Image (cartoon, rainbow, N blue to C red; front, side, top):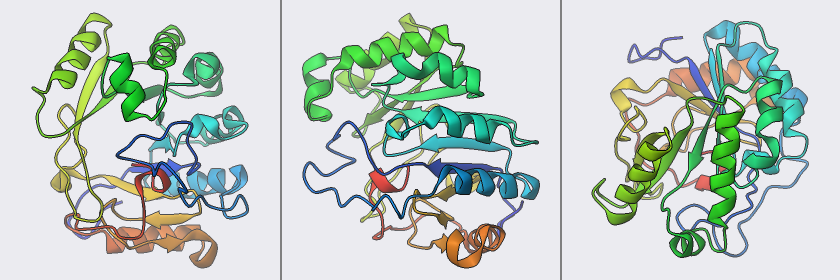
Length: 266
């Protein structure tokens, strides 16, 4: 699929839940995160049908996100359902890694290809502060489990304030080099002000090369992370929602006053 600016759109990020087992201070409110009703969340069958419609249109890369995707009950079944769609070339997941030790082997067996794991510091106390209570040792175990399960390459997403030379960013980089992990430094974003930057080690944030659409956990196809535009698959139908999002995809991101990171998939 080509958008109005002749960009090839072949990547769909799917948020499978707005819930998370952490409360990272830049992502999710500490109290009252305004979670969706379970009745509003897409069923596995609806998500699989979106993929089945999107792939013939040109989508060949899917990434499952959240919230935290591994807190969605029976997530292994969803991975199996999506991976079975003919024509899909790449199925990945972004996770905080807390539950990855438990699920990595089964995710791989179900058809997941690779994972991106969020890790902004290797200091246990700072990690606990950033995530409001998280145990970094569970993430380390999750990373090891992902490598053992063949979910390669394992990529680490490290959020930075302004520079890759920050103390925590450099320490995460050293950890990644020592453990044969790819690292991506992600400038801290703000949906309300439109603050974002190009990912170091990736293409995210580079509007000129953007190749993605997004599906929220309640069924809205969004053309851009930094946009309020959204097209409901339950209202428009799946193909029409995808096509409308494609036609409406902006040349570059602006602001998003309709979503928070935990309910749009980051």
